[in-house]
Image 1 (tube, one colour):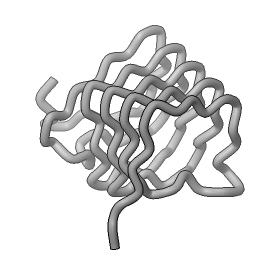
Image 2 (image 1 turned 90 degrees about the horizontal axis):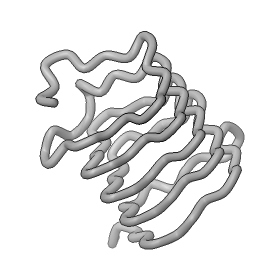
Image 3 (image 1 turned 135 degrees about the vertical axis):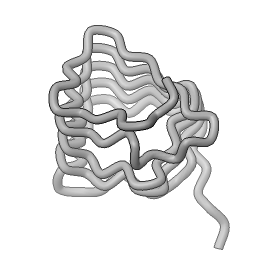
Image 4 (image 1 turned 90 degrees about the vertical axis):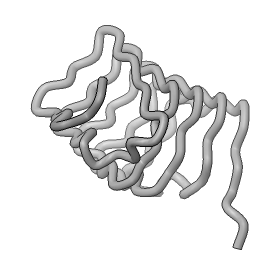
Length: 108
């Protein structure tokens, strides 16, 4: 089965607590004011995506790919970035809350 590919879309103030973010490859997408608390991002790929003012607290990141991803004014409590896919891992944080997040042995 082919993997879903989503490119160039903007997701504005969506709540992914009740429904899950589709397991797909996201490229050049923007997420603005979205609620992702306790979501499961396992095996999802984000390439050149931007997260603005999102709550991503306690999101599961097992083999999640963040390739040139920017987080702006996001709440990122308790994330374990060491569980992410290491291939081409590149993230930028601007004015984010990263309390209790872990980057153990992650090449930054």
